[in-house]
Image (cartoon, rainbow, N blue to C red; front, side):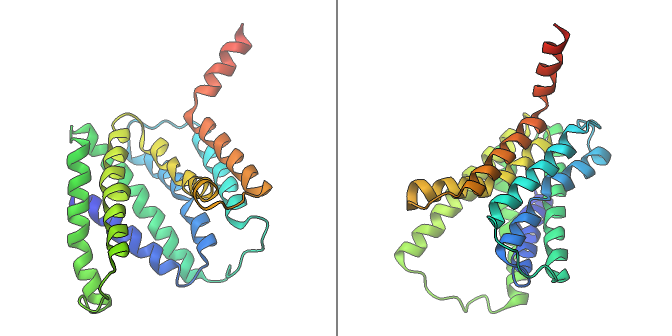
Length: 234
């Protein structure tokens, strides 16, 4: 669990935070969308449950295109020249890819998904203490308000404890590459929640990007090809 806490949370989150000191959040989001492609490439060498099908690399590229459409929304991206930010983003996607592959290997050994989730979060907290000490005073933070404290607790329970328990449970049922395609759904979910909760509007390009990402998920699943073959053979 120490490896998962280090790769999947402590290092990955730190790299992504550092990247956004050099890149806009939109570009960082697109770079984070490289996680499925990174996982696909590494899984071919490190996991026995992955095959050499062209479907998943194709789905990854299509999903990345949809992610770019949603993120940029027709606007010209800024700060493309910052190589430091790109390096940090790629390091983050590498951490996510390696952690999903390592977690899949743990499921082969019979580890319970709840134990993996709890162990990862505990070890991530331990790993982050020296990181925080190196980057600043551990006791210099401001006292949170009641609303801020409630938000922190909600994120810890919903976005971390429950989310990672579901994450590792799904990993016991599918491959590491299928699981990390959820990365492409993050901006789609955020846009839909913005429309529903905050009464924001969704542009035509964002709808197009969501459709493209949906197509990539269908291709990554692979069953559509079996359906097509069965219908062509009849």
